[in-house]
Image (cartoon, rainbow, N blue to C red; front, top):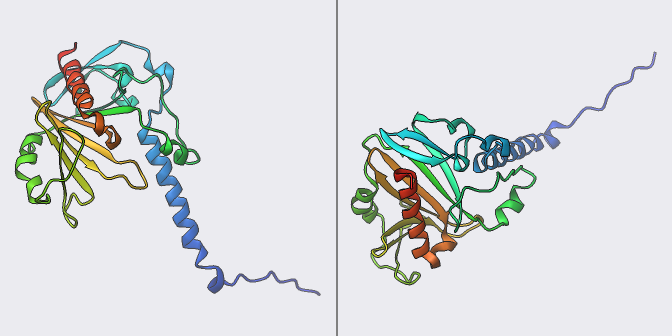
Length: 232
C-alpha cells in the first residue's frame, strides 16, 4: 500500500510571516475605525427632522443644527454628556452630506483639503478651565522665544520631550484667539481652540493651513458659539 504524505511547512522559515500578517490586519482595521469615526455613518435620510435641536450639556442649554451632528447616537434632544458637530467652511452651514471613507480610500481622502470646522461640546465637570490652562500649564512647556507667525499672531513652540512635543501655541488679542496646533507631517497639521460656556467646554478643531486667515477663523468660532448657545 502506497502511503502519501503531505509536505510539511517549515515554520522556522515562514513563521515570521504570521506576526507580519496579523500586524497588517490590525493596521487595516485601525484605519477603517478612524475613517468610521471621522465621518458620519448615517445618510441623507437620517437628517430628516427638526432643523435645530435643544440639548442640555453640563446643565447648559444649546440649540444645535440637527444636520451638523456627526454621530447618530447623539441625535436626540435633552441632557447629553457630549455632542460632536461639523460645519462647512467658510459658509458655516451643516455639510451637504456624509463622506464615506473606507480603508481602501482613506489614503486618497487624507490628500483632499479639509473644508470643515469641527466643534465638540462636552460637560467640563469643574475641570481646569481652558484659559487657566493657557496661563498656568502651557508656560511650563513652552520655548522662551517666540517665532515668526502669520500677521498679528504670536507663536511659541512647545519643547521636545514635553507632553505637547511637536505642537505650537498661537495667540492673538484682537480678535482673541488661542490655538494649539500640531505640525505638518504625514498627516495635515490640526489646531485646537477651546472656550468655556457655563457648564460646558467648546472645542474647535480646524486645519493649521487656515492660520494665514486666522482672523476669519476666529470670527467663525465666535459666530458658531453664539449660534449654538444663543440659538441665533
